[in-house]
Amino acid sequence: MTAGVLHPRPVADQTAHPADDSSRHSVKEKTLGLVLALCPVLRSRNSRRELLRVACGHREASPFPEEEVLRTRQELRTLLKSSGFSEGLPRPGDKPQAFEVRLIGELAKAAEDPDSYFTDFWARGVWVGSRDRRLPRTPAVFARKRKWRLGELDPVAQPEWRANYSSIATHSDQVLKQFKEEEARGFMSRTTLREALVAFGDTLSLAAIGAIEKKGESEEVRVIFDATRGVLTNYPIRVSVCGAM
Image 1 (tube, rainbow, N blue to C red):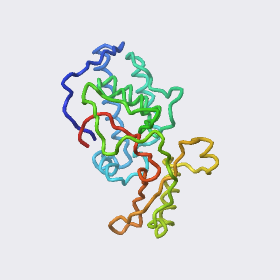
Image 2: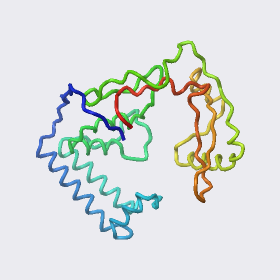
Image 3: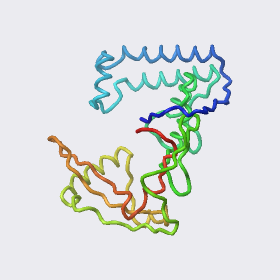
């Protein structure tokens, strides 16, 4: 989470929305009612216990029956449309997501959440920065950042592909297992060097990775991707606002 001091010259949001105040209030009240109506159908019938299970990572799937989730989702879309908002359906160019990003965005707009615009970035895929595409700013909140720990990258600098660190050899089986798990969850994808070269051309970088043992009885390791040494991936990433992480 990012925190900071308000910029001395805030810029007001001039974007108008067709929904009036009564419609917004209606959406808020009815949305809360739909969410509360789901609580009695929890598999354990204990909303507090289920919330704690989700927060502690003890739930691998939704605690709500699928049919109830689909019904509530459709009722939310109908409610939004009747109140002057979009139904929150995916749009052309959106990336596959594990969440109903557009629906979340419309509900945020109805709740007058000032950060609702972020779901537009989220739906299309959030970039981390590159030479060709800078990170966006929030000038109404943060002043511009002008200094970074990593200096400016020489325009003629060429990245070098790096070999993995020796710690990978010790934990290779566990790292491969974790990578396969992340691939199954959609966090990683498998490819060949030829396919990667065709897809990314001269922007392709092969970074060195290492593995650090986690404390405790777990066999999991923390995989480290070195995106600074040799490959120069981190240099073009420029967070453009002043704030404390």
